[in-house]
Image (cartoon, rainbow, N blue to C red; front, side, top):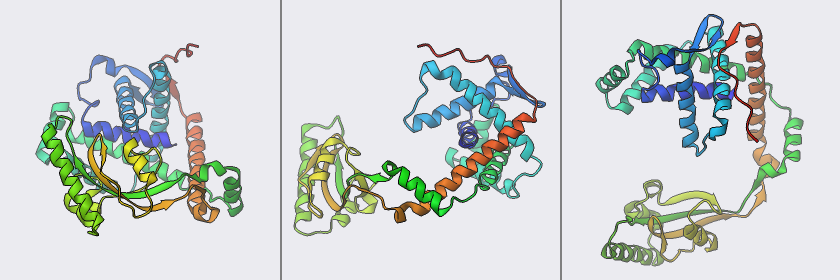
Length: 332
């Protein structure tokens, strides 16, 4: 039931961006696409859920091909129906701390927007009242709480089951060659003049000389690196496999010996000095190293299956009417 939880997140995303829940929706948004017992699901709600999920997919580098949009729409509606069934069942016993969660989420979004006044203004511009916003949050937390409770009922896998899975799925536990490196980056803008490039290059060369003479790399990175992601950590990039970095950086990282300092490297981001601090050869992760994590994953999977079965039973006992047209068969 990961999708139901994802839908709850997508609603939170839509609410945060303040779209999709205007008080006076377009007439088409009021079209009924499904009924779940006495509750109507309208086109506007379906469209909002689809937008929220597509926003999440985009952040993960995924997209829905145009030829699959009708099926995607049907699948999202199915999950909205399932979500509504869970909400109807669980509303009688909401989480004990739900009001505190709603207040905390309101505060988080207010901070994200800028202030309480700015948030109220944004709500008003979107045609959403504070009460409507809080009601949506309440529904989200009820669904999330119910699904987490259902999934927590998964039975732990036995030691033998965990070992059998490990033995039959060795490819899942293969770890490629890894290096851990740190770097100092001086950024060069695409519009930089030759003089600006030369000045940056002279600066990075001077830093490389200082490192070669024995100055602390991490301290220099904290002081001079213009990489916001690693500079504060002494330039540490953690472990990464081949192909994870831009080609020039990748080639240097996997050709250096441990503790060796690179020449100046030029990439699309600017000029770098790199030092490899640790290497890990490709290997199959041993069972003892992964067994606890694998056992937890298997328990969660068991819980997801229990949740799926429960929602299927709810659907059997409910009056569900789908008014959305069935998707056309995919073209060969």
